[in-house]
Structures are given as C-alpha cells and as structure tokens.
Amino acid sequence: MLKSVSDYVRNKRLLLVLDNCEHLLEASARFTAHLLQECAGIRILATSREALGISGEIVSIVPTLTVPAPYNLSYGHTSLQRALLSYEGIQLFVERAQVAQSIFQ
Image (cartoon, rainbow, N blue to C red; front, side, top):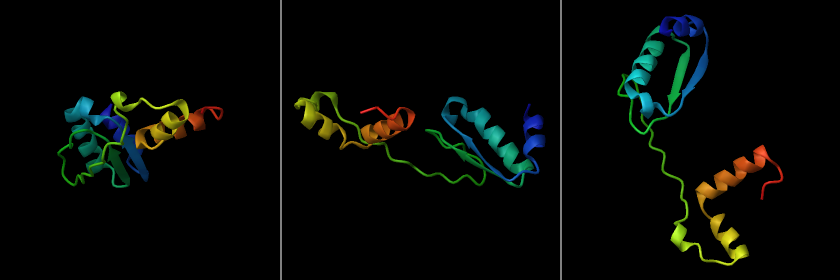
C-alpha cells in the first residue's frame, strides 16, 4: 500500500493532512518519512499529541482552547449564554454548528 500511495503522489505538489497521529505514532512516522523521502513535491501537516520524531519535523505546540468548568455555570439563561460564549472552545463549536446548520443558536 505504501508503494501505491507514493507512486500516486510522487509527481504531484500537494499538502497531505494527517490527523490524530498519536493513535498510530510509529506507523504514522514511517509513512510520513517515506513519503517525504520519495515525493519531492509533497508537504505533510500532521496533528498529534506527540512528535513523530522524524528528520526535518517542525513541532508547533497549539494551546488548548478554553472551556468552562461545569461547577461555575450557575448563571441565569441570558448571562449563562453570554458567559459560555466567552470561552474559545464554545465559540468554535457554535461557529462550526452554524456552518453546518444555519438555524443553530
């Protein structure tokens, strides 16, 4: 399978996104290293809770989005909604939900 993938992308210029690589860290590292060695026009963006540990890897730590602690949610409905929307994690969820379903509030 690895040969088939590298043959297919070998002469292409593309960005390959690999998500949640921590679940198969060793296999993801081998796959990524192989493609980068065999395919000059490919760039790979891999998300993982751990670095892949391959040559040329650049690690960027992304901070966790803020979310509310459940025990701090004792507001009235309007002020609860306003308080929730002050958290980055809630804002991202609402934005994505509204894209998927425009009537989401």
